Length: 466
Image (cartoon, rainbow, N blue to C red; front, side, top):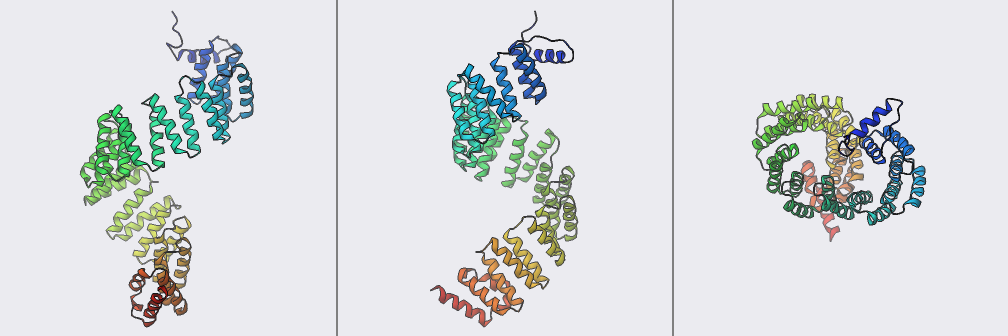
């Protein structure tokens, strides 16, 4: 006896593909065509899905399910007008079919009408017997609207239907995180784990929530339970290693990172963490060994090159540090962190012109941190270019108008540039707005700390504040 298609789910697909290779026409049940189309759509073979729909509708012209699959393909290909026309026809035939409302919701979603899509999905939900997939779709629409609370509620309902719907679980935690409700996430995951104690995904997520609250011991325990639940869970070993690092247990951390390397192909991130651990253990040779492996495994990983560079920078081997940061820049000249490190190394080598150029590149590539402006201005001052240093601080002040570090340094650089008038104005303004930070000026420019005009300005600022 020939097995039914539901007993051998691949049989209709094999038979259909055999038919395509010949001029023969085989007859299929409508349900077989639905299975064939779904198979091709799930595997991204849209052209074959369209062929199956076309032949299916020739054999079963009144099949609503095949027409709805046709609509699904049309929506996927953004042929929305034709899809809506077919849906209008289908709604006249079967106004209680939830799939019609689902496909209309997909169209609205494509048109960025997410509120309209939710209304249609709610209608579909009222008609459906099992609505967990609709809840998931509603959750995604709420995410598009940045309504994370309602999205979270939808995904929780998905988990109530299927406790192993890990996509929904990840989405629930994503919503908690976006709402910065780490306590809520921890409570939810603990409750979930009471009912599903061997869910490695939930233990892993719980560990990450504890880590976000800097509860490293609790996070470590959660990652250990994730490994107990699934001893091949590479991500749990990696996160456990990070927690052991936080707790200063570097040898144990190395063991966990090495476990990830044994499980799958080595990753640059694992090599990097192992190198960092050996560096903390002051085993320089092993640290270098793993840092080199990091950049060999992934030459585009900026943290790898920065780790090697920092290693030599801390050892004050500035020439080697410069060698490696230049190699990094040759690979990715658009990386602001590389240029900033390059500037700092050239500054240490007293290559002030090169440091000036590197800081300029750093800023142009988008790094506008306060210390970048301050260090760039200091480099220019060392090069006796006080006018440019003041110009840089003026630019920095646009980003940090309240910064006392910029204000007091400007006053000092004006003085070094022999511009006493602007020096006095700048220092008085700095004293008025940040009197408590006057030690910045006195420490950075000790040659003026005993000057009568400085003390006179300090007295004037005190009087002005009363």
